[in-house]
Length: 135
Image (cartoon, rainbow, N blue to C red; front, top):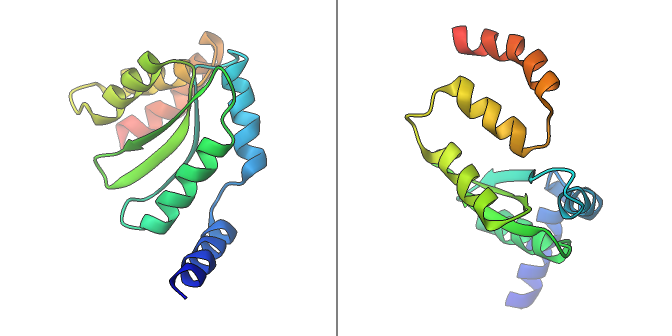
């Protein structure tokens, strides 16, 4: 009976999760083909252990050679999942997310580089970020 409850819970989580296998695979391909260093798939409430487990399983199942699935516990209590091209990418991203002394402008720029945005795109995004920083 306990197995039936777990199965039902996983089915409900799968139906309500904001991502699916196709999204995972598409991002895993982008990372494995070195189109980007990092792909962020989703973040879930760290207290929702069923969602955390479902996300971890889904990320792992859809990984490809050349990309590393990762799970990051954020300071705000959320758990973030994604793929990285190398261990150093995960370490750098973890530092960017957890280190409070990094100026927001620099944090956004570095995350954008990891996500595969070019210099021109990051420059054009700065006007939007400027609005965020001034609030």
